[in-house]
Length: 474
Ligand code: ADP
Image 1: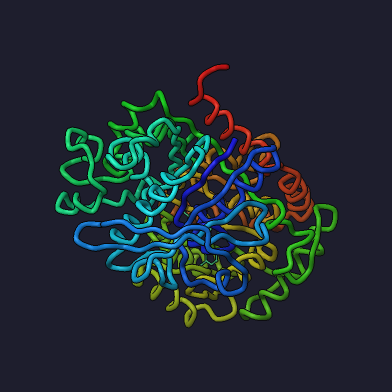
Image 2: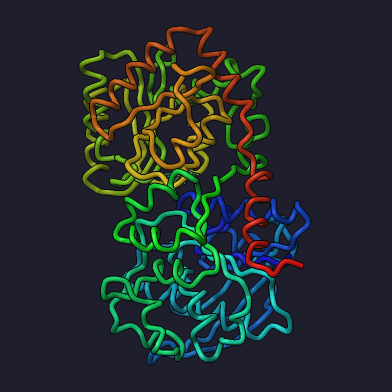
């Protein structure tokens, strides 16, 4: 099958979170299964662009409202990522350093989607599937079915994967003329609660919809930022497929970002060397358990609870542990976390920002990884933690529920709690401190965790099954 993935992110070209990891790995594993998976994404001005060689494969243009956009598609020349990578350049819109958070993101991603559909519409052949990811690309199924110029693509199956349903790309109806001329009888395929809702449109128009874990799929019928009824209605075409991890990138035995490589056989010693590096750098105490958090400092991740939970743990439980935080997001949470540095010198530190290398070192050197998320569609951090022998402390929700069991259960390996509350977090930290004191049990849990296989091989095949379900039985 020829599969075209369309996404706003793809590691290592441009990544802001789990979406980038998934789109950087899934096509690679689909190719290993004998398919031809390709990725199309915007041509941001990131390092990858300047450090690799590209060739121009197409040039075109389209109208978006009153504006005319020229676009250029370039292809990476050496198959460096183990799949064909195409970048879409649109002068004045996509030629930026960051992926998101510009005032004109609506225009940027609308133009990106039109360019992709316009390009595909000029191919001499048809791909077998167009697979779009999250709201930034979720208008493509609508365009392929209801925009007059592209209706000849309507027979190509489309699949939408929802990595996060919190963000839906809402725009006012006054922007309807951004779309290439479309069949106005179909306005209902764009609308949700009197706005154009790209994610809702994708759910309505894509042939199949997937989310990144089975539990998240079930939760969306009750909690989907306003789309609950739509998920209920469309459940027949929806499937939950757990994300995998890219074992080639995330392997403590070969990871070049970490100080000392290790396997499950020598994890205690290997992790200690990495922990020493972290503790030296951040002024922490190597003898005490190290709890880390890596991620976006937003409500979804319950990052707002961290400052109080850490404060309580370090004052009430006593200085029996260290904390190291890496993330960025809500400025109020960033400030509170930074303020703790002055209060708990020697036990607490934080880095505000995005740092891929440091994140790897933290997965390797930490003893526990905190994930108190309110919403977690799949969560990759806990999967990386398992692979690096770091015990995940998670709230029982979404993909966290599907991938982490509590060490109190038979063969359990993590720490689970139910409520996104300061008390549940501090209590779980306390459980972690007690577990850390039992060295033998820690070692046993570590080697059990590191043997769990969350590689993409399995999940990549499940996506192929979804594609096949859109095709006539031979
Ligand atoms: P999200 O909801 O943000 O997509 P996931 O758990 O699915 O959450 O994926 C998060 C990915 O982003 C992981 O690879 C994680 O290591 C990475 N990440 C998040 N924040 C940072 C940061 N500040 N620095 C480095 N990596 C980060």
